[in-house]
Length: 392
Image 1 (cartoon, rainbow, N blue to C red):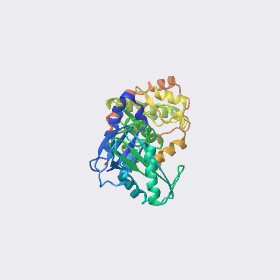
Image 2: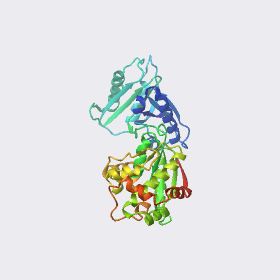
Image 3: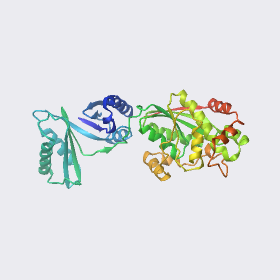
Image 4: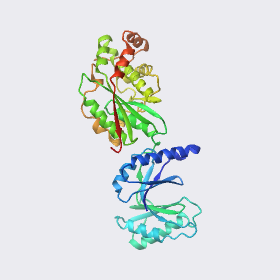
């Protein structure tokens, strides 16, 4: 039997709710493998077994499974039947022997885990038997510390599984167990990473992009579509709201002091995104703010911007610096797209000396000269909605 053995860590701590989290993870695995042929998924004593179709390549299986939040690690394994009371290791050792002879190595170790204590043999018994067989077969040396090759064996109730590689998963929680959040996404480096981190905590993400259109091209929108498609590999269906924001910015420029423009832009974005979030049953907004990175992200300005939000405003990158964020963007595959040149609304009408210590009283006074309700309706009235799926 060819299968993937999937391990999770955090889900195992959920007590009576563990079954709910496990069911969500199983559903996400089915979504990730959609279109690749039927895969049977079963729960086996703190791990999952995914029986893989014969035509599915190892490369594709690894690519799909390594993007699923909730998976700590997994292995592509082979399974053989096992009798608890009269275990016969001949088929197991023969299969392992065939597998290891295809690998170059000089030293090896055998690591067995007995999940079912009713098995007559202990894990050490199995390690010794398999190790002796491999020594006799290959002439190679056992080395318990830092060997060239490790043979992993998992002994369950009715089957034994063997594999030669553990593949790291992303960890976290299965997407879908933590509700839905609305992520403001600019097309830069930070906001896709912020969305990724919330998805890793089990949130479904809907995306809201503020475009400088009609004053600039659609370049930022095309970038954001590509970024959302990359992130959709982790949640399988995504929705993107595109809000043309250029005309709203022009009205703010005409009525407000230049030093406060950026904060006013952000407060209007929060209001518009909040309305979209409420309509989509989101429980929070998410931004890519990092403390002190730019003028709008000083403590004072962050507080003033947040005051405009009706929903909780989450900032998963708040304590990260640019190098840390960039490193994660590279790891998750969004960096290359994020650094492509574009024209986004954040670069429109930026004042030479923006306020860094904005007071809420000053902003409220300025906003009284603007018809905030009409501007919010103007933004909502021109929203475009895009749908994404994975696999495409």
